[in-house]
Image 1 (cartoon, rainbow, N blue to C red):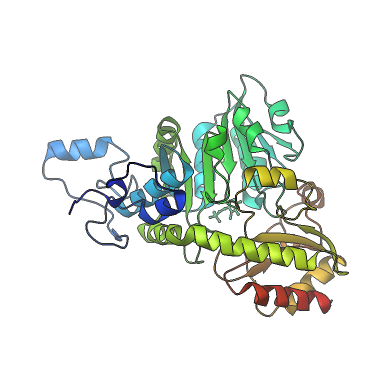
Image 2 (cartoon, rainbow, N blue to C red; image 1 turned 135 degrees about the vertical axis):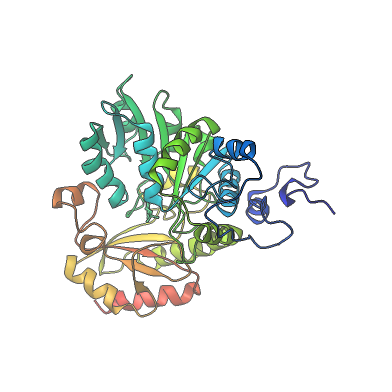
Length: 398
Ligand SMILES: *Cc1c(COP(=O)(O)O)cnc(C)c1O
C-alpha cells in the first residue's frame, strides 16, 4: 500500500469531476479516510534554519495559521482541482474572498467594471468602499451582450467582476464574453452554479470566486469563501490575504471538504426540485414572473443551456401584490423556512426587498431587478413533491 495521496494513485486517465470530488484534497490526512481537523494555530520548528524556511513560504501549511493550515490547504487543493485551476485560497467567508480580490488587486486610480444585479454586499463593496480608496467602478447590465467589454477602459481597467447566475434573480452573464476580455483581471462569482454547474476557467476567466458557505459546504454549518485561479494571481491574493487576515477556520474548511464529497449529487437533486417548482408555479394567478434559467421561457435559456451543466437549486419569483403578497407568501409556507442563504439541505425562502437588499435605494433595487414582491427560493434536499406542494399551497392561499 502506498502513502501517496489517494488522488495521485495509478490514474492514467484524468478522473471525472464527480470522482475528483470524492478523492481530491487528501494531502494531510495521513491514513485517515475522512478529512483531518488540524486545530492548531502554530507549528514548532526543529531549528532556526527550518523556522526561516517555514516562514518564507505563505503556502506552507505547517508554519502559522494565518498563512496556511493543513485542513484548509486540503480544501483549497480540492477546489482548485474542481475548478480546473492551478491554485486556490480559502477565506473566512465569500466576502473575505471578494474583498481580497478587489483590495488585493486594485489600487487608487484603477477602474473596475461590474454589473447591477449582484449579491448585495458585493455591490456595497463596489459602491461604498471602492470610492473611498480612489477605485472607480462602472456598473453595467450584465445581460446586455458586450456590455462588460464596452465599459473596459484600456490601461485603466484592472478588474472585470461578473456574477453568474446572479443573486437574486438568476440573470446570466455570457462566460465567453468575460473570458475573451484581455488586459484586466477577469473574475466570476460562480456561487450559484458551483463547479458542477459551470467552469469559468474553461472560457479563459482568470479567477473564480465562491461563497462556499452556500452549496459547496452545503449544510448550513460553515461560513467559508474560496478563490481559484493561476498560481501567479493567487500569489498576489495570498500576499494580501495574509495581511487582511480573513482566513478560513480549519473547522469550516473541514465542513467544506465534507461538502465537496456530495456536491455533485446534491446539485443534481436541487436542480431537479427547482425545475419542478419553476414549472409548477409558472402561470399561477398569484405570480407575475418566474426566474429560472432552466425554464424554456427564461429570456436567457439558450445561454443557460450553452454554459450551465446544472441550472441550480435557486428559483426567484415576482409575486402579484408586492410587499404584502411577499410577506404573506413566506409566512404561508410550512416546510420552506424563512432564512437567508442557499444551497443547503433545507429549502429556504428570502424576501430581498425586506431583508438582504433592504439597504438599497429604490433606484438601486430597480436596477438590480428586485421588486417589492420578489422572493428567492433555495430548494433543499427534501422530496421534490413535498417542496412543490408547499410552494403551491402557499401561493393558492394568497
Ligand atoms: C452569499 C454570497 C456571497 C457572500 O458570501 P458569504 O460567505 O456570505 O460572505 C457572495 N456572492 C454570492 C453570489 C452569494 O450568494
